[in-house]
Image 1 (tube, helix red, strand yellow):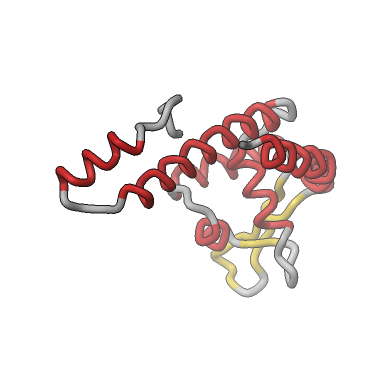
Image 2 (tube, one colour):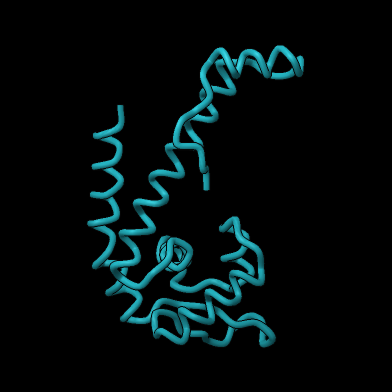
Amino acid sequence: MFFLRELPTRMMIDRYVSASGVGDTDTVAQALSMMREASQLGRILDAYFSNYNLSQLKFHILIVIDREPNTDSLRQSEINQRLDVSKPVLHRTVASLLDEGFLVRNDDTQDSRAHRLALTDAGKTMLAAILPGYFETISDYMEKKP
């Protein structure tokens, strides 16, 4: 999360850049602006997903499994490779999705020590229900930004 409501002025950024001898005022200003916008959109999406008792991470796990073109399941390690989240956090979140009935764990036919995670019908129904509003929320945000 980005916590600044007001970004530093260009003069302030320039003063810090000049004092440190590192960076470029325009680049820093652009990066701060992007971080604030991403944070604002993230909060809006958090609120949207809370209407469905989901988090963004739960949504991303469902999407990562659903978007695979040649399979309907993934190993947890494969999900971890596709998401920027720690293994313990992913493990707890997957456990929650299993408990909620959105995912099912199946044996891996190629590796008897591994399991694969797949969407249940409830998981597929949840995605179908939230995707239109998800895209609408993003579109509305992008249309309203200055």
